[in-house]
Length: 255
Ligand code: MF3
Ligand code: CO
Ligand code: CO
Image (cartoon, rainbow, N blue to C red; front, side, top):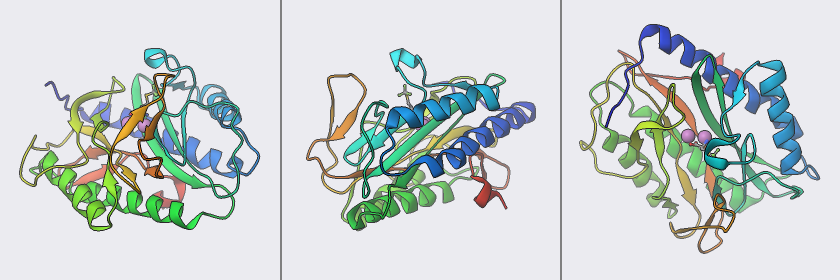
């Protein structure tokens, strides 16, 4: 395992990439409305990243992924491929954006509710959001990866929801997916010790039903095996001397 420690110069570049990533999510929010297709959302994000930001959408052609963002609706856990599906009121959608700017990656995703939120969707989205923040709160020098996983898993399971095990957070920097793997379950005091200059994502996937998933024949789309709703949020985090910095905060949260 080779975990890269980012220099202050690299941290500055990660800050820029993170901010651009958040800007895309801020930008797309108003387009997430009944009637829009996920392919249209992809196109809008692609053009904004390329033409306005002068950046690169990392998913496009990444290991053969055909689009510039991931769009995961309702029981889709992650890696949904944008297409001709039209969003309807009550749907929930995770939009996952990764941009590359000056060689460095920012990676973040949010849940958006389409029209009036569905009660059950609202609940699982809120639990996933709280779980992500409980994980982030553990990040400081000397803490261990297991502390993050435990904070997330114990909270989610107390709510009688489940944590997906097959996909995890990851180191990030010059590469989209670097070491370490950041599991969203685990035992306190175990795993890699965090050090200033590490950058990684925390991106728990929370299912309203069982934790098991299935991969569709397109080779990308991950769905819940029991077709229960699934929600995910993601931030890119920098470990600092005093704790952490969230690199992908939206404009509202940066104030
Ligand atoms: N953005 C996803 C993550 O959080 C990875 C998507 S890989 C892709 O790690 F190829 F589907 F884009
Ligand atoms: Co990620
Ligand atoms: Co992502």
